[in-house]
Length: 85
Image (cartoon, rainbow, N blue to C red; front, side, top):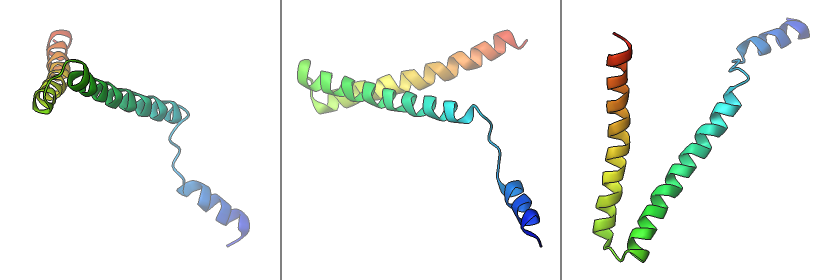
């Protein structure tokens, strides 16, 4: 096998993920970090400023998470039913 053939084989083994993948990756990373910071801020505010117990703050944070994911799921389901008739 010549060097040119080996180079062609190496190139064909690589996966082309597209130009927008880096943008999508960076957007997802910043979105995830922002959400984690939001949850941490909610926890700190509840314990330090409002004087709530850790148990109460964790229940509040859990409720926020449940409503956040649940309402997004419900909205997507309802939107699919309404717009995809």
